[in-house]
Structure formats: structure tokens, C-alpha cells
Image (cartoon, rainbow, N blue to C red; front, side, top):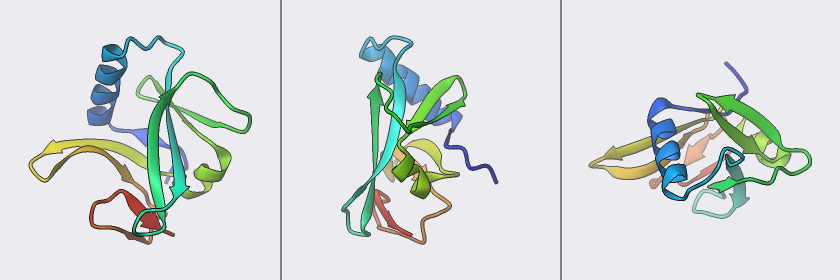
Length: 111
């Protein structure tokens, strides 16, 4: 199993659509991180950024740069970012092999 943070084709399409709608240039990337909180203890955060920080871990997947701070990477190594637009919910999903427990909404987890 790879320790990279990857992005599926479905998520890639949505990321490119959002970046285009917001007129983001090629210097923008996807930033993923973990924050304390949520019903399981830790929650995921996803945003767009154009300012790398010291210690960032960078991954190029499907032509999109995904960046993660070092502390969050300890929780997110091997995670795949997906996008769902089905009847059971719409949005980005983190498929995290490190999560031992997730909440019902899928937005928080515990290790």
C-alpha cells in the first residue's frame, strides 16, 4: 500500500470544476488536513491554497497537487480522496486506512 495521499478520477473532476469556477490559477493546490473535533475525535479539512508551508508533504496525483502538513500526514498517509454525488449524500470523502472508527456522517474519525 502506498503512503501517498491520492485523489480518484471522480474527485479530480470536481476539484477541477471548483478551481475553474473560482478562477484559480495553476499555482493553487488541494490542501488536506486533520483537526481535533467531530463526534469521533478528529475531523478532516479540505481547502484550496496557493501558499506552501515549511514541512508540507506534497503529492501529485492525476495532475493535481495535494498538500498536507506533517502532523496531519501522520493520520492521512495512504488516504484516498473521493467524491460522491449519489442519493445518500454529496461531497468529498476521505478513504483513510488509518481510521479505526468513523462517525455516521463520515466527517470525523479516530485512530
